[in-house]
Length: 340
Image (cartoon, rainbow, N blue to C red):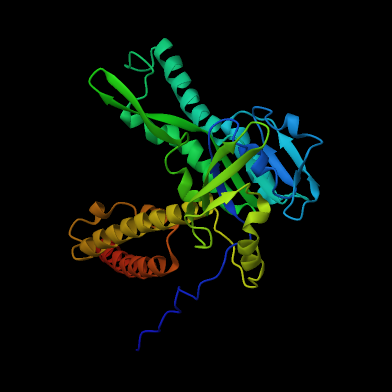
């Protein structure tokens, strides 16, 4: 019998969304929050109340008109609270079109601080052999877990996403000499992988008439790669937004937990098949000899065990046939011995 061909699991490229995911980074005072709030109808996770002084303000659109900032805030500081905020927007964004996390740096610090606090509690309670709560190499996996969960949740949000990151000084140590060699993003190092566009924001000019300079460090679209843009805003990315809005055929992004559950089910099924096949081999081996009828134990127990295993249908059918065949042979041998 010819093997039936499977339908291909691959297809022509399709977009999963019509929204941008942007990471903006820079020092204090360069206009990171100002840039983020130029996006339409913002929902801001704002643990430091950094948007308070933007209430009632506006920005200049490219045509010179004043556009009022439109934003609503959640002031939660905990990383799990932030995850709940993101999930609520994923399920019901309401009239909000953009999600801002400002600053993402704080939640990375929170992930580290909460972990070391738990270690300190275990030390005080005598539940660990550690002498201090200093972060060790093996700790990073557990520290990163809630932070990465938060970033992965952003994949399913039907909104523009803007991650605001601070920068930290980088130093070179040469003996007793310590020299600043530059600046880098102050957040977990994999954060930029979640963004379509990464921007380093700088400030030039006088205090009275500053110019904000955006250096595009990453751009998946290729439209802005390597460019230096003055006074960037939401409108800067209009060419890319038009490209996305022209997409008619979109697909959803699978939730991380749903994917994990599917992988877990596959592994559990593999374990069940392994157990079932081992049971089949033991039964077939026992079929070869009924010299010691008691060695088989209670056949009802074997059948009960079979029913208790949630096997795939194909494996279950195979096992049932073997069990039925063995049952018939067992009963024949038992009847023959009872008549002697």
